[in-house]
Image: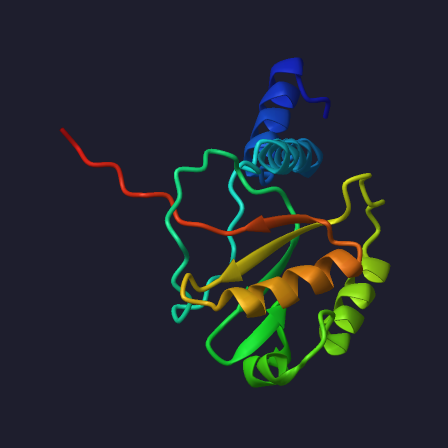
Length: 166
């Protein structure tokens, strides 16, 4: 027996209602990809976080220039850290008589060879995080070694003074 057009239509409608809904994952993946790229491009690159040890008290300054992306050299009470790795003890640097400390220079040379960025005419940038009570003789030895290793664009990390509300 032949089914009528209305019966065929009702059967199709019932079959459609019984089937499970499907998500179009391609368009969903496109949306998430665009969202990830948007967040990567618009991420805040204005702020540079320097890992600071609590034992280092930075000097306070009114400087407005933001730090650029550079190698960080931290001077703690006991060690000199380059890129977070302990390279040299403060006692060794104090006992060293010369101007250019060979262990620190070797590490800075290694870091400059590892870097893929071409050096600028003013030299590679480096940021020194040192306690404000660090003796000038030690700071001078560190800075001389940095300049000899090609890191002539030296910045000293400082804290901004807190703004007082009126």
